[in-house]
Length: 356
Image 1: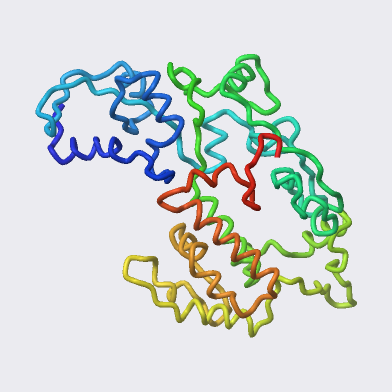
Image 2 (image 1 turned 45 degrees about the vertical axis):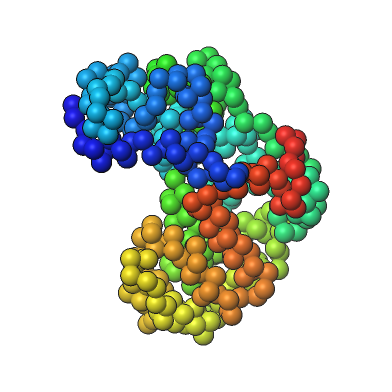
């Protein structure tokens, strides 16, 4: 095997990308990378090989020429984690990702509820991850009619996961992942990562579809309103039945026809630098006030910067703030650098303990 000078040079860039001043900007700063550095120090170059070659690459391929250093070496590589959407995460890890026990962290204690009218399972225990004194924990009507005093569960350790799958736990695990055949896999603190672009597109499609009431994308309908009524929350939004038609009282997210046109006109008139995204103008249908043909990168730019601009004058303040803060969240987790000092702090800036 032969490596060009440029290829060889590019494979060494991680060595100079360690964290600086508390800023994490590269996988080399992660616990998984540091684990392989400490436990198997001879692995100084990591690639993303095909899965069938992983064991061979772990043993090593001799006689690879490094044009940058002018010497031969034994090429070794390790798979540190996979990056995929949530269904693929279930296939790769063996974890159950649908049904009543679909939370990889909560496992058998996943708080789930089947919607009678929507015929889907919803997961309503998310407030337990908020700081212990967060005001949302005490609110009832805005959520499921109950306060939340629980604490988040501790994620399973790698040893616990391996023990469960080897002992046939089929409640939350459907199989033992083939990756455990790799010598180092059971030691990795992070084995699978979710692709933010998939999540971002799903969230963006739902928000745009609901605001503009796009058929097939709208999450607000008679079934959703009836399920809210069955749960005893937002009863003022229950359907109003008439002789000829059923009317849904407007919620804070509903836009008038004029407001929908205003949002679409805002997108239609946006101009962005070349290469920044698709031509947003081509995605807008002014005739029926819709956005059509959104790709993953279009949703990425919408959620990162464009959506807060388009809705700034058409929604009530609480709804507008909620959507804007969600956009800020996606912007933050997609940043090139992450302030490590903030990772263990809650939304009020306090040090987060393992129990809160």
